[in-house]
Amino acid sequence: MNPVAESIKEQIKGVRTAFEEALASASQTEALEEARVRFTGKKGELTSLLRSLGKLSSEERPAVGQELNALRDEMEQKLEARKVQLRDAENERLEAEERIDVTLPPRGRPAGAFHPVFQTLHELVNIMQGLGYSVALGPEKEEEHYNFDCLNMPSWHPARDMQDTFYFPGEGQGGRSLLRTHTSPVQVRSMLKYGAPLRIVCPGKTYRRDNDPTHSPMFHQMEGLMIDKDVSFSVLKGTISEMTSAFFGRPLKNRFRASYFPFTEPSMELDIECVECSGRNPHCRVCKGTGWLEVGGMGMVHPAVIRAGGIDPDVYNGFAFGFGLDRMAMLKYGISDLRLFFDGNVSYFLSGRDA
Ligand code: DAH
Image: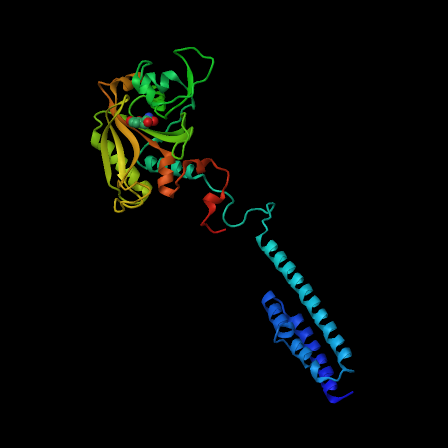
């Protein structure tokens, strides 16, 4: 064999060994790609050997050529096999990393959390308890009597139109049952039960025929009621400012607007300074550029309601307020669609938190 053929044979051996080593040490697809370029690429070691075939005599060329071609096929097969192996290993690693074993007991942070609306409810109740209020609860299946009549809304009262009510079927006019449209009936039930003086908050579920991004057929309210002698309007304003500032964690500007509710006189609605932009962003998506957010209704309890509660309105007076808990939760936690509160997909609420 002539020296050129000899040298090519030697080189083939060297390339084969180098290839085997490179293949074995390629533990990532990048390294594998480097090996492919290094050996079988256009300027690769094997390719240049193929080119050097021209230096051989026509007798020697076929045998060496065959050997080189066989080596190229072998290299390509091995590269492909290794690629599949690495991809499988990577998939397995990812699977193991991302696998959630639902049978494991919780570790560290407890599994699950209070619903944002219930966190809101608990926080507001805590704040009000700090101001000396107790919690009173009432039934969700309510009687027309407590939901409307006792609240100065007799059957002919136009204010009943403000509330689209779910009535229970099969019961006659007058004493119908319904899903309470607000927590205000708990005011009267509590006055009848506990008498005066009284300081209560009544959180709970309420129902109306409504369904859109800011209304759902079931929602939550918290009612407040203070009954005592000589309760003044300024105590109401102070109480409400205290509650909203404590809830949002900073003093907020309040705006009381004259309004109408049959069960209070005078009545007001409360707007708070926009928690998102404080009125500084004319394009704010939360306050729509108005700088204010409507959060609840309130007023001095109407004497007719105090009387319905079995208390003498000539001796006692008081104030009441009603806040939407879902709205308060949306504002505090920056949730834009009320319906997410009743969606089963927990990732909406977990996103952004540590695992
Ligand atoms: N019940 C009213 C509603 O659901 C809210 C409300 C307004 C409650 C004024 C009150 C009040 O106690 O004084 O729209």
